[in-house]
Amino acid sequence: MMMVTRSEDGLIQDTSALLSGEGRKVLAALYATMRSLRLYPLENQVVQRALAEVEASARISLNREGRLQLRLAGDFVFFNDVRLRLDLGNYASFVFVRKILEAHGVGSIDVNPAVDIREWTSFLSLLVQEPEGTAQQALESVQQRIQQAGVENIAVGPAAALVDTLSLSEEAKEAARRTYARSVSVVKDVMTSVRLGKAWSGRRVKRVVLGIVDQVLHDEAAMLGMTTLRDYDEYTFTHSVNVCILSVALGQKLGFSRHQLFDLGLGALFHDVGKSRVPLSVLNKEGRLDKEEWRVMSQHPEFGLILLFDLHGFEEPPYRAMLTAYEHHMRTDFTGYPRVVRDRWMGFFSRIVAVADAFDAATSKRSYQYIPFPPDEVLREMRDNPSRGFDATIVKAFVNMMGIYPVGTLCILDTGELAVVVAPSPNPEELHRPLVRVVSDASGRKLPEPPLVDLSEEDAATGRPVRTIVKTTDPDKYSITVSDYVA
Image (tube, rainbow, N blue to C red; front, side):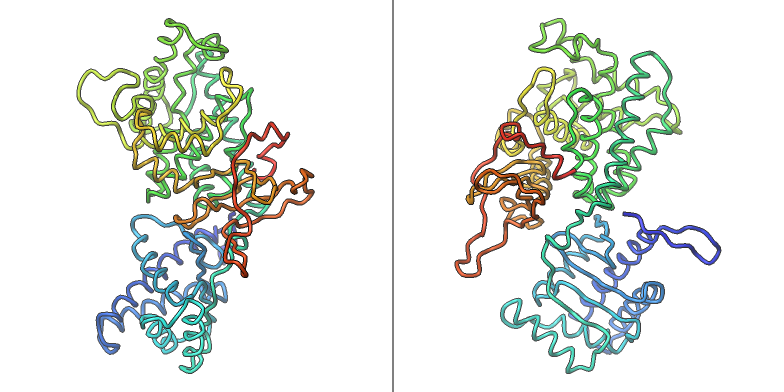
């Protein structure tokens, strides 16, 4: 969600963007300082310069915001309630800082404006020492030693529950809904224009792709939830937007820059633009295609490449998008289509879009697929069946992003309750314990206010999970629309 302020010259500024940049600088400064404290004595010039950088980078936000908070939540890091975007440039620093904080049981750091470099020195010197006992004992030890050192303007606390920190607010969902609806509308206009032989401009397309990229960067959970809004009558258009969202979200996990995410998103959004040149009688046919119909359908990657080459509004043709449209059905072993006549390497973007495309297609209702496959079964097939021709590394990253039970999966719990998955666990070791909304009780009665539940929650007495997924099931069987609880 975008936060705005008005500067002294009257210009509107995106505060969330400012905080995101400042947060990354603070994170990098903490990383450099703690590394240097482990290598050199406190009086060393390298250490002193690093400490000065921590104080200076933190001071910017402290002066404007009146506070500074760094908070961890699974794979996420929040800076004054703005989630920081992590990429290859800052991922190493985040992992280093997170490991140190987690070792000491620290999940949040709160800093007051009155903090000085002496307090930063004492605080960070404590953190680079070996932790004591369990995470809880280590946290209590750090809190006690902070007090003994006279550090009054830095406080630490435990990690908040994921349910409390994950962004699932109605405001975030509403922003995601607007972006999704606008994207579907533009894709529909473009595909219709192509079918009618009318010209189409890349300017609206650019705005749509950038909107999806920015929304994923600001609130990935809300945007992934939108992919459950599948419309049978508008499948071609919603499928294109869903593939774009899934591809951009995966690109972010892989550390792509914003520019790279735009290129990936453009190719994903129009990977099937060539279907605009396929007759509707073939495109919407119920049942299997005959040999001639399949020949026409299998030409859509080539049609897409040509259509994107003629796209106006770009300084040069969008070559990566063209390649993605052309390659997304080739398969890594080149047993797909179009047929390969000479040695080549399938592009990285094409490999990503191929996975996103196959997942969304298999889990959606289509003219020839009235009953979609359960999301968890689709992921399992993509992962375990190499003959499908997907890049195994990309599939693994996709499963880690989606969880074993992807968003929108309807589950039966061991309590007899029905629950809809709303977010995967950020802990790679607990992908089988996602966040869910319990939508009906054991008697089958639908709950008017479905509670948000973390399936990794354990019973304090037994140490076992309070709830566990027994199996997944078909939402239509229970007249449940999963998007009502996710999107």
